[in-house]
Image (cartoon, one colour):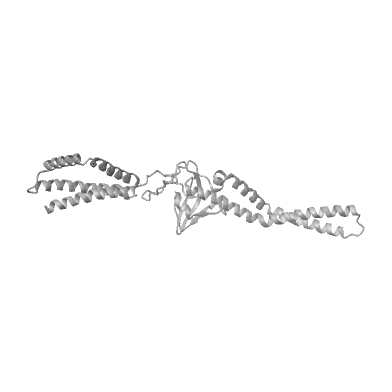
Length: 303
């Protein structure tokens, strides 16, 4: 009898382990291995239980036992009409638990047709209004030498007008004309000084807004980034996809577009390229499977 009980315990462990593994393990490889292992254990336990039961004295064989149990259940169900509704309710609860206990796995492997450098990606994927404003401010920064020359020219002109106004023999009409010219040139000079002071800061602020828009799309998976992963002093020989969740930590600037560096949270990538993701993950169904290697394009050797 003790051997029979031990065989039943093996059977229960196998069945229970297979059920729990299928519901709780998110790693597809280990989930499959665990379910197969526990299923084999349960099958062995079932076979040993049947053999042990048949060899146990003073008990009926399996066929008679099953027949007696079936007759007893039929009589019980006839005497208690609520039996079938309760069984259906229990079955429905088990089905709902198994249906909603795990999130549906989706294929979130990025698919990119063409990779673009950072500046080209900004032109194509960033908010057009932000890009337009950023370009205008960047053009103002490029015109800083021109603004400086304009300020110097206006300053010299204002000095000349001031000297001319100091003359005593000037007619009222000419004085009025010089005063009007002085006011106009002073306004131009003040505007040029304001542009010179604000152009750099405004351009940096707008550039940060454009980059934030790109990073937001990278976090959602609408865009995909790739680069050469750097660990300590070693740089990978091939590019790899930057996982979506890494963009919670990563950031980049446009100080050197040719050697575009992405870093943050102890991670660092070189040579960032960005592409449009043709297989974006559903917002509520992103499941990161760490058992799979990162999606990699055909090798792109470092220059």
